[in-house]
Amino acid sequence: MDLRNGDSGEHCSAPREQAWRWFEDFLCRPHGQLGREGQVCPFVGPAIEAGTLRVAEWEIGPEPSVDELIALVHRMVDAFQAMEWATRNRTLHAFVVVLTGLDAAALPLLDEAHRRVKAELVRRYLMLGQFHPACDERAARNPGLRVSRAPVPLFALRHMAFHDVLFLDDDGEWFGAYHARFGRRYSSVTMPDRLFADRYARACEKWLAGCGT
Figure 1: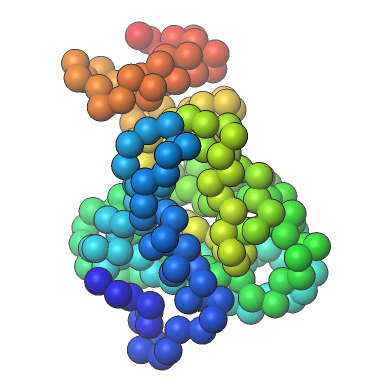
Figure 2 (figure 1 turned 30 degrees about the vertical axis):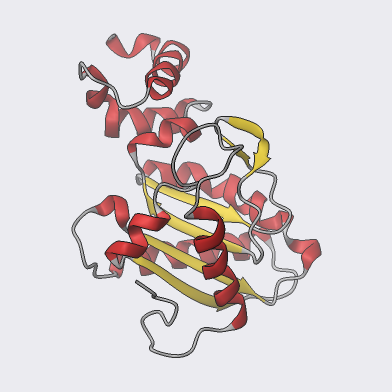
């Protein structure tokens, strides 16, 4: 399913086209250095198939302040929560905003905006990712692989998912929100991934006095 024209029916711009190519050529494919089987991103491919990956392009100044970027994220959240979806499966709902007009020297501001707004979004069971050509975010199973280096700067927003323990276990507030959302699933006899269970158990011991387990 090709959704490059988005909701407007207009032809896709060059930055948005670059983003789509990165989704298809990198995020939707396996990678030998990822440390696990499957696509680099477990969400993008299924969201494309379900017709629930929304991609917009928003103009921003060449050197925005961090506060301006945080305001943009809030605008994203408002738009995301107002959207209607082709499926009720919230795990597949995703909203990507490609940022145009940004100077290369300003790219680290996306990282700082992400850092500052993360706790607020996690409390609302939302996950934000920042992606850009200089992004230093690493793969959960291989710190040597910079998985968030996109050809164009963008933010991606989705609902919190079960595997997000890999991104939320090193802060007590983040993990508290994750535990409230998914803690009951860890009482299941069968676990889909031992890594999730191990990270969850260690975070329980560190932040929540064992989570009662």
